Length: 146
Length: 112
Image (cartoon, rainbow over all chains, first blue to last red; front, side, top):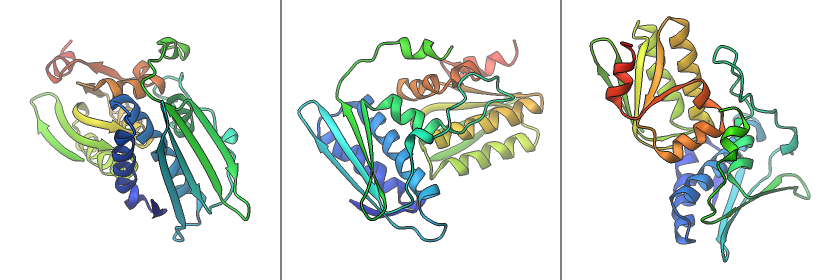
């Protein structure tokens, strides 16, 4: 599907990901992870990728593979470098906690692979891969002192 | 997303249903902030009906938590689903937010 990069179009994106990933065999937790990751990617493009008031296209595709779902998010927006995203603040007390950087952090935590490539002529393509039905080790929770 | 404000004697219960995402979170931030600014600083968010949250929703929770505590109250969550709990856990929110199994125990915790 292709949408204009407006926040009002987010429900259509989430519906698309939910419906398509269920059809591809994803269970509840995997559907949640895919919705979250695609939202974070699209909101970044909507808020930071295109100039304010000039929303360009976001092209989404989702395909089921043998034991995984692959989503691509392509745009014609400013280039970005996911590795330059700020580190999230996971440990400060409530008074000092900063909310930035959680979007990319959650994408990386939720997905099994994240691939980024700039498009020739401008724009970006993000590929998100989620293996289905993988039960994670609980070490992630203690990793950040929770 | 639906938001229902339930005025209890000592604690305000805010019942939320649906998706707390990049489109809806501003409305929730406004509704919760209005409670705090009108002096209802002890708030329990009933999350039983929240099926989804993204980083935009986490911003709402953090903003409300800070505002309520700065005014001497607190913002606590009840009945969080496993998927939403996982996002809170990964994001380090379970170390700063108080979570309860149900609304009754969350409300009761303010009297302890």
